[in-house]
Image (cartoon, one colour):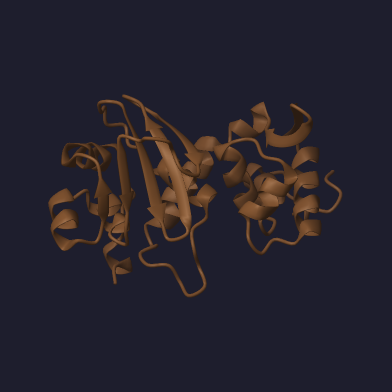
Length: 216
């Protein structure tokens, strides 16, 4: 039994999943580790607002649940998803897509992080085949990049040296929702550094639908 997690007293997969995943900050930690392994301080810096003791406790819970493991990277200890934890990837991505349907503009006080933007690119990759390209995306203070493959994507936080395409601006959310490149470009709500043809490829490669009721 996990030492500090709530239990529900039910022999049920969803109840067991809630024990592991239902703690405050847990899904955010898993999101960041889905993007890639991280040192403790990298996790702490990348998740504004989480107290250090809370991060320590949540990582301990996830280690005991065998969802997260420690590894040596050079001289540093990093946290990464275990094989068992990696099986959560489609669940986390589907959960992110579900919640994003009701996310138009950020609420007051909300801002993206490098990891959340990278995870959004991972979440939004469609099954559409495209010609491979690299892209850097800027949303507010957050920067992430992606190597878009014919049928998949690899994402990372931060800037990318000499990407094929750079995108920024408040119109990115609606471009991801609608895929209407002409409207996005003519409205001036996105900034583009790269050929327009790659913006079209980006719109085909990434889609994060938005419910009509959520549009402002």
